[in-house]
Length: 524
Image (cartoon, rainbow, N blue to C red):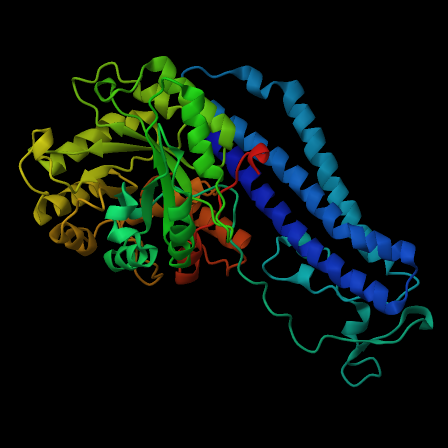
């Protein structure tokens, strides 16, 4: 069953990416053809058709892609309920209805594309369509761009350099003299990205480089951070981070750093907790930036949180329903221990994409503590992204002072070896210089891009986790296998990059480029 789900999800994601690519190509060709229609003076009723075509094509592709994303969402739900598989989700009647809808909408795209060629193919000159013949388009799209017979004439004949008019109507159109420029890189936005690499948590902006966004980004880059977490709300204040995000998001995104919001739900009023999170998730800066994901810090009853099996599940369910299946949600939880027998880890994980356990080792061995934590959470079948201790734990019963450089590096080494996808630290304002230096100097959780050098198993795992979170599934095996190469190639195709099937510099940079993750349509 899991193999079938994996193959079906991959096919659905590939088809959705191809449809989006097709829509972009057809949209551009429709614009060019419309300009050609106007230039040649073709009747206005035809011009009106071309004027409406780009929007029509985009709507059709959006509908088809939406159906496919819905299929992936249902498969995610099936995969998340291995113990209680619900056959009604994929009943024959539903599957048949899905197939009919997808086939009909795909046929609409085909009819529109054929009409584009037929309208100008008889009484008027043929317009060369070069974008559909791009080597970066899927093979089935390349087949639409047939070679013009006149282009096959021998050099030196009167037709060389021009495409002759059909039936003698209209002027000759010069043939292209050079290959078209490659399509520019695009950022696939099927799903939002989970954090990989190294991160740091920001609690109080005014105590974080004085709240200066440029200074925060500069230090993050110097330390090798790929992401930061920013507190976005409080119980009494609601969403409070607008001004800080207005400055931080554009600066961080320009530097290739993702920004994840976080909040502390108390679960006494779940709707209020969800609404506060949604306010942060949907907030748009004046220059059009949004946060890259959201982490819910779901603490213990001893901290005033009304946490139990029901509240943990319902909070996640309502938050997921509000933001949709493609927005990254991270559950920040205590590390498992013998004292937490009633904490609802599984119920919380049901609606979140990753688990971020708070592994504050205090006086214990950091390497053993994080390895034990990852092992205990592994059955939840979610990426584990531990939060390490970079603060003085004396007030919580630990030794005085921020943990040493050796402890911080040992934590990262053990976390990576145990299977963590990324690591982060609590917190920016508490870490001292030696802690910052240790995070910077650690060789773990690095994301290189040199095809000439083999990636390590943890690096492969990180890329597999990132690709899967972005909607290009690669089984997380920590081995460079055929499914991983295929997922990389699928991503490169969707991004209009050279399709190499390996992580090169352009692919790495595109994978790590922040973008606004998809939201539920009602939030847009």
